[in-house]
Length: 275
Image (cartoon, rainbow, N blue to C red; front, side):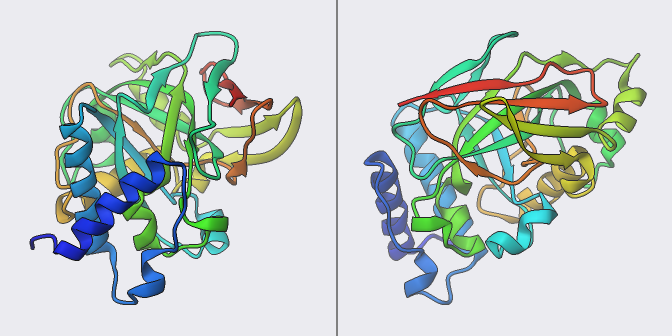
């Protein structure tokens, strides 16, 4: 199925709007038939345009994996989209990652588990088999954004608008090896996490919030990706961030945020925001 001229225009318009830190009405406001298949075509068109202007895809984000917030956003299944060299950075091993957000539109913060892929992932693999192809795990913050005012949209709108991806910052990866892989398989389904803003806890989450665990979220994307216009192998060296463990909270320059993870041998993630 080829992308229509109208959807190609939507892709160009969304790229310009986010580049200008602007906003627009959801596509579904004016086109009730707009659905996920067309949205992923727009996402693929945007990916091609970003590559053409010099950006390099470095992995994937998975969104709306946290079932506890599905009703809040009226989106009831996961989505996904590319992460780029221009949006991804590894934070220092200690201290807060200072991050500018003045160019983002209505940014919100999401604490997430991030995987580093060691070998290509294929549809149909079990969670244990997926873990055999992962060689690193870290805590990270995805900073999501919405060009749709007040975060009002349908699922297809979010896919078209970069899967709401703004930035991804993560700690250095902790190695997953043949010696500890079985332990990690259990830990990744049973940990807890508290989210703090300026030293005060604002929310708590559990591994099971994310479709039963981060590996379940990864499996959902790997199994679903081939049926979309983004059809692509999740390849060696790519990173995948698996969705927020808590609610997503608005952020502003001057704020500092930090995780408190329980049940995982990972360094907590900390970030401070500038304009």
